[in-house]
Image: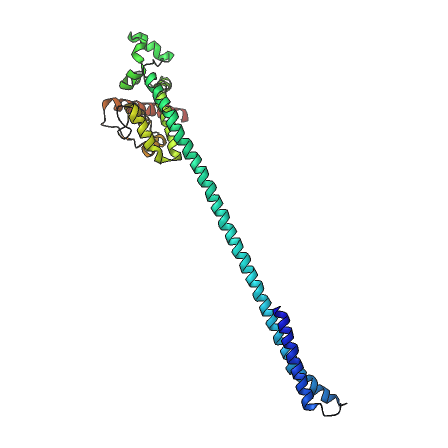
Length: 281
């Protein structure tokens, strides 16, 4: 519509310029002199031609302006679409995160009590010694009842007494069997609290109901596991225990029962390292 208006204005100005020429020179007879026609052509070029060029230039500028407005509008639409996509992705991430947290919460509420019950039951079970340990036990005149899990937690030095360079593998396996139910509880809690550390309060509440002491002053059996892994030098396990469960990772100078587990881990680590050095020579 705007271009048509420009065209009409150019036509009107052209008509005025031609009419003015005719008005001034129309009374003269038609000239046969080429020079007169050259003057007329120069007049038209300087008036009508310039007007047409200006009109065309204006139309081009306006067209480019409309195109830029269209481009800007398209860019705005693209930006809005990107914002919408980003918002949708955030919504999906939020929903995924919520499902993961809900699942971790349900696991802690439903499975942790069962795991704690199993620990309590397993404390009265005998941890069957390995064949090499049985030989020593017979030589000592001891019965297998001496190796009830609850008593071994209290007296890790009983396990340490079997330890030497020939039995280190068996003793390490036996220590892991003794601590097994509690180790599995640690690993389970690490996995759930990695999803949402804020669920620690739920864990704390569950443990507080069942252990004599709440997790902020950690249960004895869980501390035995931490002491053992600290002695082994398992930094990853200890770091998770500290980060997720607020548990201590140093045990030198602590309760003798915990120190026994720590020292067992230290001795196993040293013997394993010595054997590895021999193999590498």
